Amino acid sequence: MLKKGLTVLSCALVAGSLAPAAQMAQAAEVTLSAVSAFAEGTNFSRNFEAFIDKVNETGKGVVQIDYKGGGGKVMNPFQLGDAIRTGVVDIGNLPGAFYTKLMPEADVFKLSDYTITEERKNDAWAYVNGLHQQRMNAYHLARQKDCVPFHLYLNKPVGSMDLKGFKIRVTPIYRAFFKSMGADMIRTKPGDVYTAMERGTVNGYGWPSQGIFDLGWHEVTKYRVDPPFYRASVEVLANLDSWNKLDDAQKAVLSKAAAFMEGLCGADETQSAQELERQVKEAGIQVIDFTGAEGKRYLDQAYEAGWAEFVKANPETGPELKDLLSK
Image (cartoon, rainbow, N blue to C red; front, side, top):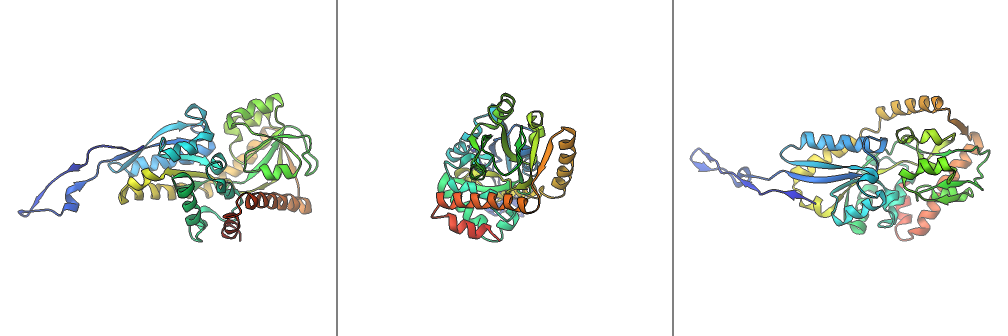
């Protein structure tokens, strides 16, 4: 919800005459609320928090963000999309998989062959932003972490692409892929994964290559399956009514900070990936690597299963999105 004070009007006498009205009016600073689907300070909140810091640094007197925090302590992460839709939250940081009930097409971002920067140039972003506005009263402000892939993590070994007998924690992101390998699928909140792995309620989970150490999941994870697949996407959405109430200067502050955040997927992520491999070795997580023809088959199956499920579920928009997001 926008919290906007009274507009302050000031008049100045310049050379014996009134200054133009545009110079007299000074809009009050606007404060927007923000929530992350992930716990504060963890991998998939950090860049969003850097975005907030950038807005609050460059937007003094124009626009500020009141960060309420992240993860389950603020609200159920799967309800954040609806909170953005209704304006309970002005800006949210969440993966598309967390709001597919509101916008089924949100499951497509993982399959994109392009970064968000490239999508802004080839009409894909404009199309996706239009869907957000129509489906959930939201403006697609940014995407972060789209240079980070996913992995399958397990607590018991697998020797082939057969997951029969494995109970795998899923979200819509990798549901079709893991189902195609015969897995039994279980859905839980991220905060429940550690306990589920520890108790054997699940034998594995899909997750981006970063983040498991922040969450402590390495303590209950014994294996990582390579090669990585798909593209992580954490969307930053603004309530459309809140966005439309902003003036051009306020929108510019947010847009520039969003571009800054999207640019963090670069050298910093390469360094993070190198650090991640060191952590994997130190934690004793063994890498099961499908190479050569088997590795290609693994990746082909991931994308074929993903696109087949997506187009079937979205017959009107799926084919066009596949064209826009495929090279």
